[in-house]
Image (cartoon, rainbow, N blue to C red; front, side, top):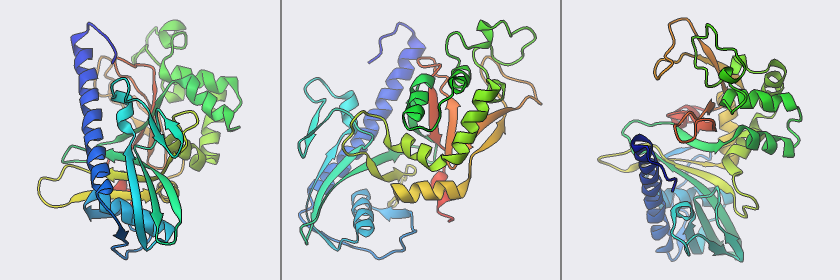
Length: 326
């Protein structure tokens, strides 16, 4: 855990740790219930396009996977929770699944299962949950401007140094801030970073063209890429949408391909206007900034006190209700 003498920052770090552990508890409960199943027959017949379900999360997950694989019966399965590895004590920081050592994975659950025909699959699942009565946004990727640019460059999606400059300006990396360039005279907005529309124009144009042309590939990278040589990146997404006091859990479930397709159907790459209305640099009415958006993915500067210059990608609050309309 990060060490600090700042009392507010300590509270933020502890709150984040508490939230992660709560999420890990949810995942551990699903794993426990899955591992208690000896065999399982496909329980419901629903349209492949259905994405929101009500009931027991482990059964919703298993049914969704079996539906996608066209399996009728599972005769054996073993589930593992990987999310806890990030906060585990020494000695608990590695899993071994089918001969693959795993120290970290974008998959929060990994399910090893076999059907009655002898077919075996090892499946990664990204798990998200909201503990509020009203859905909030969900973080899917958190990195630096340089790391994100390198990820895009490795895949041949961008190769323009000015694009990296634009990303660093957007994040407020040291040496790329308005306060570093002498451009703060008369500035109303924050001197700590440039907004999207203020970034290096050629680099920004290259990135916007790339997002528009390769939206699905970038979305897949954000959802699946996070660890080097991850043997079981997520093939499914399961999201507990909100806290339910009475009644069954509401669960959004997608195959990865289904999610990416629906996200693109919801919206292509675009710029959404917004205004800074709180914080140290609250802006007057009339000043608007561009926020990059593609599908249900929101791109923003992290801005947290402990990681102020990180690049953050979220799924918009309540996205599952939007995707259920298609």
